Image 1 (cartoon, rainbow, N blue to C red):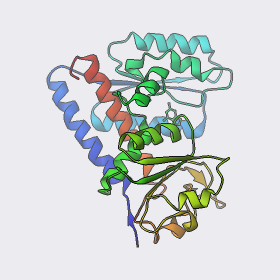
Image 2 (image 1 turned 135 degrees about the vertical axis):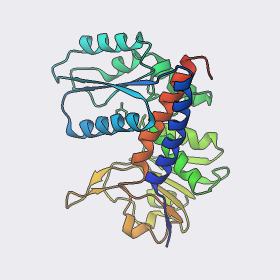
Image 3 (image 1 turned 30 degrees about the horizontal axis):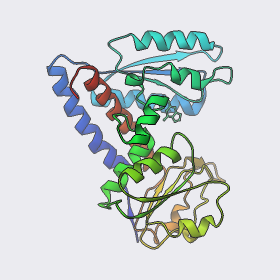
Image 4 (image 1 turned 180 degrees about the vertical axis):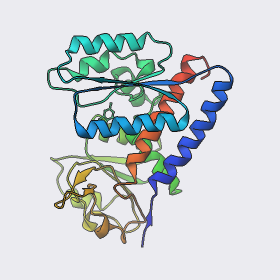
Length: 284
Ligand code: GUN
């Protein structure tokens, strides 16, 4: 029987630490603000944005929500981003992705001030992560690192396998594991012998986007298995990339879906917003 990593409990600890620090900053006259922009009415995005707003309230940040209609032009969205860049009350800016197809998300991200880019999606921040000199951690990979740390596992020298090479998760995840001196392999759709490669991993991070693809055959006995997936199974129930029931007895530690990585992503967004506010007030 493996240990189930409780993402809700770990994220609650992180948020409590942030809440206390936010309270202290308030005593010094520093209020923290996060602007969240959503364009259109994608139901999943609406849920994410609502959860981000609730997290802001829980830690004592002010959230500024901008819900724009799907017909918003790229120019209108860029005007809003520029206004938020210049607003001192706004320490962090997040434009929820995906944006409607007629808007180029790269252009939007490029126009967010790197100092306020709490997603760490701006090329400047991506570059800083690459060279290991960064303030903002990409939220999901950073949350994964916290969960690994919560198991007491030292990444140094471990075989780490990341399945998925997206800019949001796979690539930065590999980089954060490398910064902790893991021996890192990134797998993707063209990887040969995926099962064998994964079964070598002491730490396995699945970010594939395919429901329950990772069965126990992919898992080494005692491995730390982190599931970034957020899918629906054949019955419409939320599930990860890992077949939890099949893997839970073989893994040493494993995250559930929901209740694993998901809550951590939002906690790390709060962490980045706090970091942004401190940096903008000369406190870093
Ligand atoms: N859409 C799905 N995940 C994310 C995220 O982490 N940040 C933003 N801005 N949009 C998303």
